[in-house]
Each structure stands twice: as structure tokens, then as C-alpha cells.
Length: 314
Ligand code: AVI
Image (cartoon, rainbow, N blue to C red; front, side, top):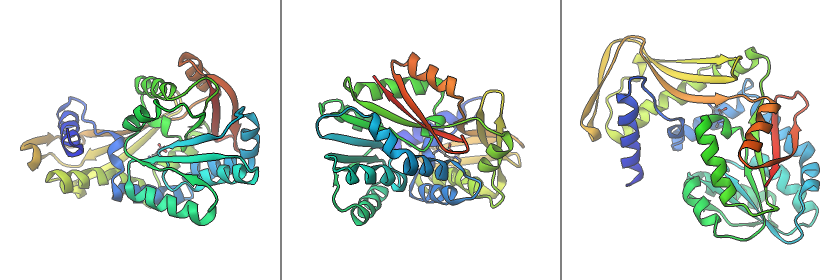
């Protein structure tokens, strides 16, 4: 099945379900990835500066915990622009450690920019980029016996539901050997108002990020969405730590999607669920690690305790 066929199949499945749903993984086409870059620059979106602080100030402490006695690889899933990761890699270079950086991203454009940036700032590092989705790349990596530090940063794990977290971690385990490490970014529970502002910004950048899903269906599948007939709603539940985001149909409407040759009906105020962004507590993170066969080495938190990069081993 081509990527377009998979996209079409998932859109049909999601829009014909009783509770309409479009997976947040479809946010990240070239335009959506650009909007996400803008989100990361918003003053309300705290995860990026918090994780930057952790990697800049505590990268050395993290490296002290690694027990590699031969050259290793640093494999990053969903590498994005790599600016935060550069803080950690810089420390490795300063120590004269021998390693290869393997950034993996679905977007060829993102990988090209990252490699160019990395070469400009840290010309001495060996980079072996991979373009594609995590799952295909993990298959390839599971054949490798090179000692590895896997990075899954940015709080991406928060976008996965419980069951998906389990299978993602099982996939990570498959590409790891005893003595390898996994460093995962988790957004932590905090004042609910701080979280609400990060996911419903006054300039409407997060709204544009969500509405781009409809533009993407229009562009790639010949959809007939009138995007001004949809609004955005996002809600943080401090009891379970979940931010859930939605598109809301402002009028009763029928939308035709050419590629699928199907129509989808929306009632006034009907919602399409677009994203889960789960916020964790430290005990929850420990329980996720243990129930999935990992041992927590250490949690590295920023000074406000908003975010943690959690180092695990097998
Ligand atoms: C990519 N991911 C970790 C972001 C998050 O915070 O859940 C995506 C995002 N959605 C809205 N704003 C940012």
C-alpha cells in the first residue's frame, strides 16, 4: 500500500466512525511540520525550552551514566531540527567520544536541514541519516549489533495512547541489546493553566496546526472541506493528565472526498478528535518503564520541573 492509500484508508476509517477521529500523525506534512516549528517558538509552548535546558545543563551528567566501552551510535527517532540534540552531541565531541549520529525522520526536507545544520555547527561528527517512518527503520536497526543510545525526545510519547505506548516500547526493545539505553522526553503534570495555554495559544497557531489536517485532505485526497466552517477546541484534564484536541464543525455540512468518492456528514458542533497529548507524573513514568521491561537509570528534570528526559536501560 502506498502512503497515499494508507492516508486515504485512515481518513475514511476515522471520518466514518461514530466518534470521528483523525490521527495526529497526519499533522506532519511539510506545511504541518513548518507550523510545528512555529509552535515550538511560541512563548506559551514550554516543552522546547525546558528540554533544551535539560540537554544543555545536564547532558554531561547523562553521558556519565552511559557504560559504553566501544564506539556507539546515537539513534534519534523523529529528529526534527536537531537543535536540542546538538547540545548533547556537543558534549560527546568535547569528550572526544567516538560515536555515529543516526537521525531518523519521515521528512526528507527536515533531514536535509538537520544534516546541514549539524555539519555547520559540529563538523567533526559522523552522521548516518535515515529517512522513513520509525517502524520500517526499527526493523533495519534491529539487525545491528552496534551499542546504542536511542533518543525519543520532545515529549512525542505523550501523543500515543496506552496500547500504542506498549507496542512502541516493544519495538524500541527489539532494536536494543543488553547495555543499550533509551532516553525519552516526557512532559510532566503541572499547573493546569500553564498546560492549557500551551495547547490553545492566543495567536491561533495551534488551531492552524489542526486545521491543516483538513487542508491536507483537500490537497492530497481532493477533499471539499471549507476550513472556515470548522473551529478548534482543546481541553486539559488535570485528573488524568490528558490534553485532548478537536476540530468542531460550526454548521451541519456534507463534505465530499474525491479520492475516496465518499461523502461525510457533520452535525453542527460535531467534533473530530485530532490529538492526545498526555502529561505524566514521575511514578507513572516509572510504572511505564517497569511494565514494559525497562529499568529507570535516572530522570533529568529542568529547573521548573515541567519536563523530564528519562534515561532507561534494559
Ligand atoms: C509533537 N508533540 C510532542 C507535540 C505535543 O506537545 O504534544 C505536538 C503538539 N500539539 C499541539 N502542540 C504541540
